Amino acid sequence: MWGLRPRRRSEMKPLEALHESLHKRVLVEMKGGRSFRGVLDAYDQHLNLVLSSAEEVVAEEVTPHSGMTLLRGDSIVYISP
Image (tube, rainbow, N blue to C red):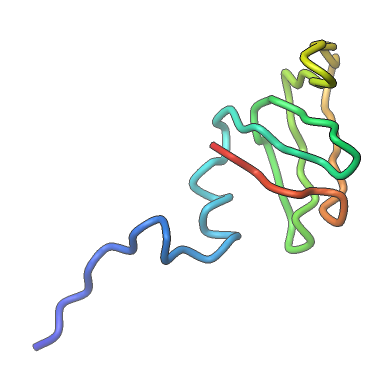
């Protein structure tokens, strides 16, 4: 009988990996060289993200953002836990 083995992170689909990062701090690299760090509060099938406690990082300069920050999925280069 075949047993089910847990999936390794390298075998996960993108939305599964995002689900594991919910309510954790992530780093998001955007087109144009902008980056954001914050807590991933929500996402959708288009990879639009909502971050709380977000900071924008541009050329090593950090700018805090108050409230929620919405990042458009089509502008995201990568997301790192």
